Length: 205
Ligand code: MN
Image (cartoon, rainbow, N blue to C red):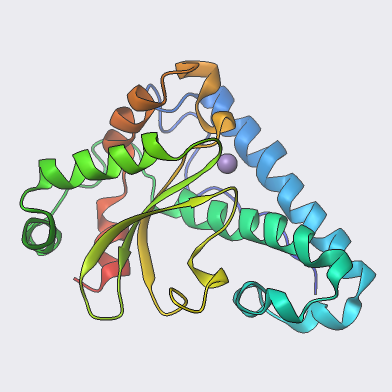
């Protein structure tokens, strides 16, 4: 089995003006495609691993041959994270924050604004490339986390049972064409194109 690039669930221009068409096109067809291609190329070197699904691969990086461990971590993580990211985005005003999700956000962070502030802080505070996440922990609480590069919750035994319900790509390739060095503006604009229905569904709210 080889991994393939999933189609976007909306057009490349669907997130305008908050995330521009050119960024979306390059992000999907070049960056995400490269993670898929490089993941497949790594697994071709040790085809016995091609039967495993992506979660299994990322949860067991230590069991992989040392010559592909780094490539699977970076590119398998990249494929997994982007597949997730496209699903938690949606055209502006196509979804809204319902009380089913608003209530747990208030319970865990005090208010929706406080939640957004903390999430933006995680996005801005990630030095270099990585991700900000809203995670439903195994105990049901909501936490904001951040990972470097293309790492994610599956790669650590401590977080492997968590459920990420929202993620923001803070690699420069995700925003530089429109926002240049202003990552904070990109993180604020992101709220306009969050797929709140998907976030609620992922959280089981
Ligand atoms: Mn990306």
